Length: 297
Image (cartoon, rainbow, N blue to C red; front, top):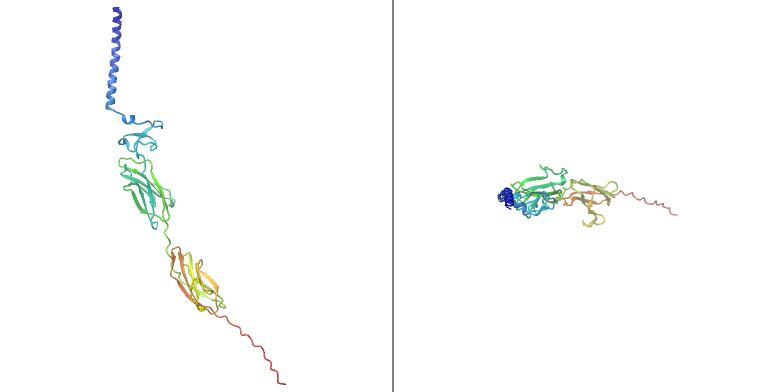
């Protein structure tokens, strides 16, 4: 029996050394955890995206880490979002445009891009003469000289001095108005003629730059009815004359006043005017019948 007790004591002594070693490592592990906590990972539900993580745009100061495919999952609201909205407009004649966007709480500046899609040169940074690529936009709006009739795409990222920026950009598209054309100048001249017997007259005038039609008036001053639009049977009042001449049936011996305005969608010019008289048709005298006198019987 005493021999068995001695064997048991020896076995107990044999296991004391492994227990002390385990105790040492346990205490060491506790100390490491105390001095090196990892709550940021432990506090968050693993992503469904195979557990791949990366720091959010806000970094550790945001208090979390998120999947590398941000912004499909966010650790704080709005961290990966672009500014909430952006809009553009070209008031008036289309020569000045303004782009405005929502502020972002994490931003101290913005990356602004504006592409004139009508210039045919694509978009690059540095930008072309009619595009904008600004990585240090301090406000939330920009007014710039625009091209009338051009269509613009605009988008913006938020950014800050810590090197953080939104992984998405909010975009918009807008088209600048085309200003109306100026009113054309009056035609330099107008003339009229009645060749031949005076029963046909032609009025001709100079073309005017910017005109797409003409307002023509021809008044037969010899008919005694004045001039009105709609005209009388021997006058002309045409508001859509497309050419620069008109031939019409005239009255022999009549005097005509003619005037013409150059016109387009913006209005019409002052008139150019002229007067002319149609000739009188020469009449062939009718011969009198011969009279044969019969001598008295």
